[in-house]
Image (tube, rainbow, N blue to C red):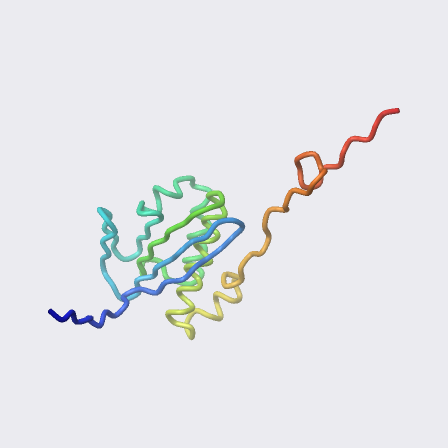
Length: 151
């Protein structure tokens, strides 16, 4: 029996976003109305993070203004579905990594429409600030000095 490979067209755009130790793998579905991720079904304007609805994963209200600001600046609220797999870092840096990945995906999807706005907003630039490494002989901290003798 001969196996025939089918030509499968990708219905999504995949990119990676990073911030500190967090890495976000983003899939943007531009032309799809619904996406099934395991038991979770997403419609246009929704997103999932690590197979959970985005609102459940980033459940603290402090993170939503950042994401809403990003979506409103570009005028894409409710237009796309995106799924994100995030690992490493804390919740805040995971949100920044996710925004970076979504920005890259939007730039890849339609460079003419989004590139100027994304570039001006600073969303395409990776924030290179990371944790300072611990040095030897510093007493457990990166910048702490050894205590000098009193006498």
